[in-house]
Length: 129
Image (cartoon, one colour):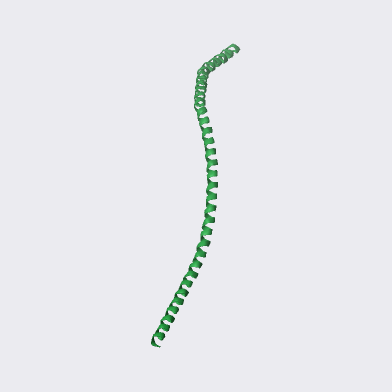
């Protein structure tokens, strides 16, 4: 009976080994396929990685240039604000001169009118005398 048990155990082990062979062969094929796939991915990713690095470098350069341009624009805006402030002051000053000028013109006009009135009045009296 011991021999029969040993024979049954041996046959069971043989069946298990025979069943494991296709599984192990499939596992080997899957490993080879995975290795080929990883090699293909590596071949594809390597150029992409260098392209990504080049794009990042270009992005950095563009960002630095944009920063420099914005600083220049900021300087121009500050100068424009100063010019506008000076123009506002000049406009206010000229406006005051304009008001004074109009008042002086009016005063001169009134003075000239009075002078003409006085001259005509004097001529009118001089002609009657």
